[in-house]
Length: 307
Image 1 (cartoon, helix red, strand yellow):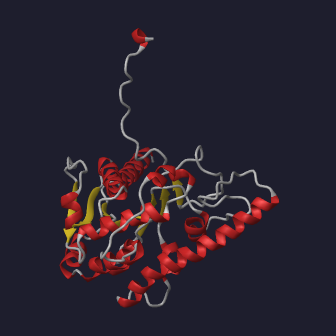
Image 2 (cartoon, rainbow, N blue to C red):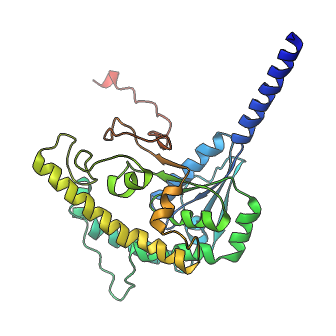
């Protein structure tokens, strides 16, 4: 009896170790944004963190952004990049981001420094918006037959993407691979909580850029609720409908809308923490991992002798 028990225990232990080994060696595709903005190097750092945990990680990025990037290319052995050509020049992306930063973000209290910049002036240049570029960039990925063939052959276990560029949700349908949302900011009730299934009321959790705290008067609750519905409307009109056009163009999951596709994510992960975010109930598939993008601490300068 004792021998049988030890044999069973050994088999179970081996099975558990095998499962852990498989889980810790997953093949992950990280879909980054283009344009060498702040989100691309952040995506590289997230990919490095996944690689350090034993996963094999592939980062997809357009060729121009990769060549112009200034990120640390000292990748781990189990991390690689895969590039593809974009149908518009990188300078177009730079101009579009610059126009967005200098105009759309102007006047926001967290961005006072932007008010010191001159307004954008590109006479005779294109009139693209970030939303146009998202559509074009996503089409570039899904139309690239060589890229899709390579990604299919790699047999990824999971796709991870930045929530500012939701094309990875469509790519997951193209490759039949589950996906995970990764947000580099705190959760926004009108953009994230509603799709993640968080039971959040706009009467209690302030909307981003509302400049409100969680101690709300009746008038502030009314203001926040109104702002919640306005932001939700424009997020749907400018962002989600853009990707739904791409979804319909490529006949990906015609049985559902893009809004219905977003909640199918396996997990929602945000680089945030309740120390800097508003407390709210979170379902099991939503996680805060604040600090994942922070670098190693640097040595403080010795100042005792100078004081």
